Image (cartoon, rainbow, N blue to C red; front, top):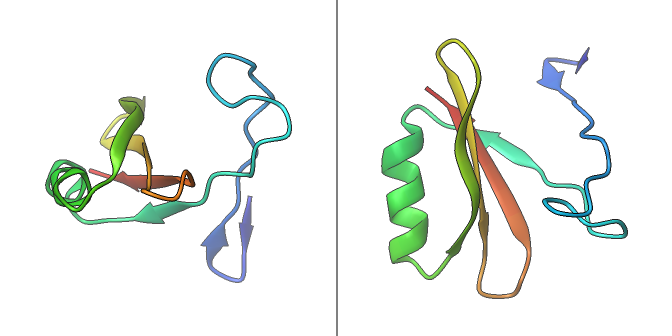
Length: 76
């Protein structure tokens, strides 16, 4: 779903990957998913999930920041 130029999506509850009661994961659009993921890991984030191909030419990855918040990135 797109609202005012912002894509909004909802992921079903998944106790293994996104436990119930956890915050929604915001995914930021990036130009180079692999490069941004490596920069975030080098800056202190930890791997959480992915990278996953969700559509041709479109991938996502999720990382946990040093405070425990899961953040997502989406891009080619």
